[in-house]
Length: 116
Image (tube, rainbow, N blue to C red):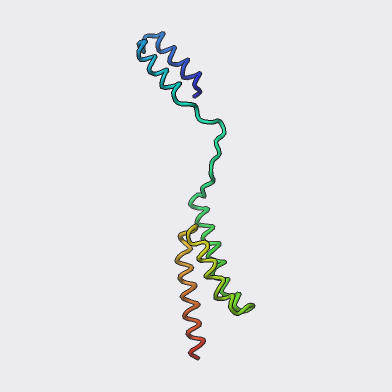
């Protein structure tokens, strides 16, 4: 409701006797004291829970598959999952468990590789 509409409504209430002159004056001051909200306020995009879940799943897939980059570039299989995990863990809290799991797998597989 715009300011003009509210003032018109208050004037009608005063004319009908529902508001006294003092009540009308206080209500009018309240309406005029607060500026109306801007017509087009910029809104920040906040992801819906389903969007966060699908994005978490997508990055978890990338994180786990990045371990396979070690076959193309030997050190990349260790570095890529850790980099993805560290960059995205604050934005997507569900990805933290996947990052810990991937690092644990890298650690255990390297122990197995070096023991044999």
